[in-house]
Length: 230
Length: 247
Image (cartoon, one colour):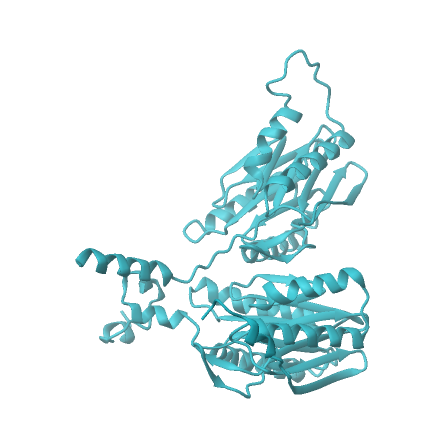
């Protein structure tokens, strides 16, 4: 009798859950940095649970001429964070009469995330940028501001699915008798297209369209590639 | 310690962080009481159309049967709100205050729909960050720089722009119908959009138990705003005699 009571009580409590300030809106980001370029891509699906908010929402934010942020996870946090970032980029521009460079931006983002350590922005951030020597680098973050500088990274809902694939295709890990050649922008975009296609097959939160942004010394390019929409 | 903290209230109104370990009563502060169901919106070739029924539900009770929840914020912006009605009425005051503030500038620059959406996003996000959300879905429809504009905000401050938006039950039932229609004909005119909207409202009335047979429509084009309604759905339940096995 007592057992039955506690059971019904606990089921009632789990049903009457507390307001959850976070949502998982899905979406994936992939970024690759080369010797003289950087490329970053996101899908355009924005979901909640089993329904899709939008099939047409890019998760890339161009913060300066030399850096692009990819941000996915809780969309309301992404919106807030990027709005704040843009404001601080503007403030820096007006104060110093030049755009913030990529390493400075990378550090600022880490600080801004850690500032909310005990009520974090629930977002997976990947920053792609060109550095002063012209090389492309990727900075990847966890929600509370841990940052790692690397050459390629996958993040968001398919991050764990895609990272080993990138390890294999870019770092050529677990391959034998292969002569390593420097990665070109064209090859990087091809890899991105392939990995997103793979992710869309397995992850319901990734799909619809790929948006790709690339930066080289002399040009900024943006392109779209269609993906499965189911 | 300030005055309010030193007074012994039966319930702690001041500190929202106490929610988790306190009694069940507090929890009800954060759940909607009187609610309104789906809001739908379509952007067509030269304008936008939104619609919502006029019911305020108290749980499963059809409590308020003539409750309009479509507002005109200014000349080029419409709002449709679903969710908690008390929060909606607070929000309405807030928006009207904002609009008066804008008017007082006398600069002849009306607030654009995207700017209003952005501002509402901050309102909603700030409240969710206090763990005291306004329990609403807001649909912002209007004309932005001569083009149709449709956007949506939820109680967290999540904002989306799209050509089709449906909240609540509409997200499950109306969205597939709307997407299907738009895939077949991407550039709807006003009349087609209105017909599509009416069809969706009717289907929602059949399937959504918290919907109502009277609804309002608002159409905003470059020529102006048109309010229609309350429109009554002439439902045909004759098929219900053939449904069996669910008694």
